[in-house]
Image (cartoon, rainbow over all chains, first blue to last red):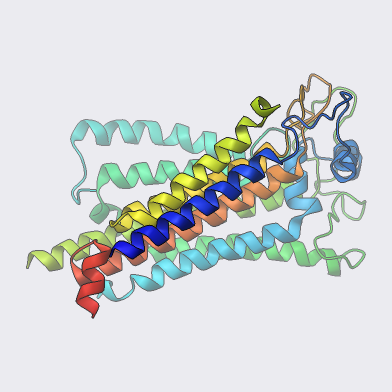
Length: 96
Length: 164
Length: 115
């Protein structure tokens, strides 16, 4: 059982080193570069500017979830339906 | 959770608090296109109110009143409404899947636009988005309540078989 | 410069603690809590990518003006949270089924009984 503990420990230390190195390489928190203006995000800027005239909604996040990216919400509804069906099938035999 | 429910004070206070939480959750679902919230968030609030009823009154009483057959009919209704609103974009308008066809001038059922000057809008704006919010809200309420109810009843049955 | 990256270091800390709980604990319920911690770390990472300094929420009803934060990573986080709930429900029902059959929740005893 001892070689399992050492193998798990080495794996954990390697993954921890990679994660901390990646955390220090990420974009600056607050998205400002060295001069003081914002880093450019063209897709999100287009969504923020055009939501009220293209969809008529006041909420940017709901317009993205149901209008600009509605196909992802269809996949998520399928996952929720499959989870509920799976739970009811597992406990079907006890109800006799 | 114990099978016969909790004491009399807990049952009375749960019965008093349940309508207020229900109205708050339905408010979050319906106003999803104006204020923060939407279908998933409001559905989670109403499902936790239903879980509160399940803990206070016990799993035997709740299973006698609400079978999971009726809950699965609710959930299928929500999913069918969502997918049929997506398919109407092909048949009744230009031919694009998931089109917001109620806002582009074909029917004007929910077709007002938000007022950019004052920033305060009515509910019948934003086309197909409030109808999709209601469909997803129904699906999440029925699904989460069915999961919690089936797990509680199955644990009671396992303990009953063990005690014999 | 390193003081500004604190949310990303918190993400790394959550994932490391979750991975330790999955690898080194014997109880099945503690392993499931570790998987939930990894899920929470990934959701925090998605929201941290969407913040602009001095901005408000991307909602136009009575908004005070000024720059707005990005709405697309917030929408992806919503989907990720719902998928986490679905996976947690299936894992917990399988643990109840295992407990009914083996009468214990210790992973080493279940593996010995199977051999």
